[in-house]
Image 1: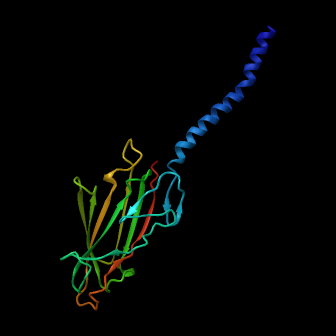
Image 2: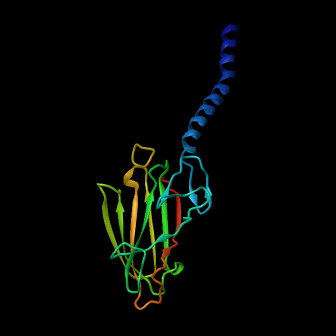
Image 3: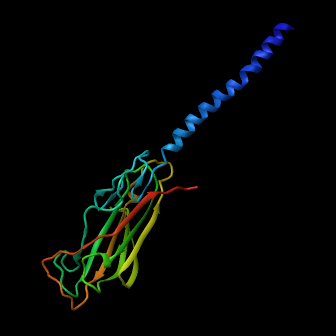
Length: 205
């Protein structure tokens, strides 16, 4: 009877320790899974845990900035040159490539022509969005008549069952503009766009 009481008492006294040990192991496993996806960049804030690799027009965003360090050039629609005259139809491209990042992303691109070096009166006529740059590329078109500003935004989720994004996550926007006529411009000077770009981790509940 004494031996049985001892064993029972000993097992009972060990239960709290076993529970603590089990809880500790669960927390380690759980925290490792969650921490992989706590990552984002909004303005100048980035916690670099999961792999973060997002390129805009070939330039990779850094943990300290979500804006490009180079301007986006404007091209004449008739000959694809940067030499532009008054009355010309023009375009510029913005390509978003997040295929090497390990998190789903949400982005917004604010294009305000009043902050560019374009002549006053330049208008955005429309834009085209291309998805999956390559042989399976799809295209959608949106009209934006007579406006100087447009906001491009979208959420890109991770493919089901995969950590890394794939080529279907690539987006290319071609934005078409109209230079007013007459316009006092110097043909030799190239025109460029300075959009504000914000990219953050997409949290899916």
